[in-house]
Image (cartoon, rainbow, N blue to C red; front, side, top):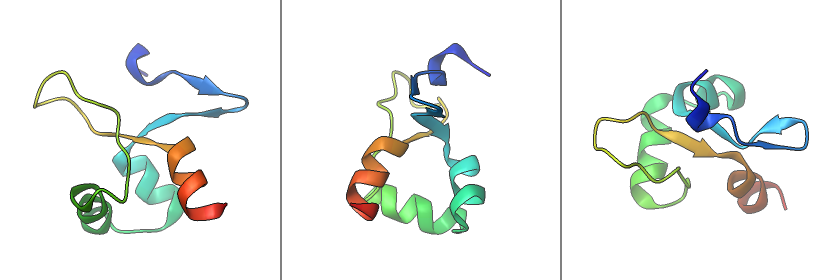
Length: 66
């Protein structure tokens, strides 16, 4: 996996690709993209427009599960 997404918090990765996020939480890719565009899903800031989208799991858990 790319060094860019290997930041770890405790036992889990903080940043995961959006496709992996969708598989893990059982939502469709279009729903995740909609949440991202509405600002409900925090992503890792991108340096270039063509980089992959990584979801911030820490922010997701704080917003939806606490």
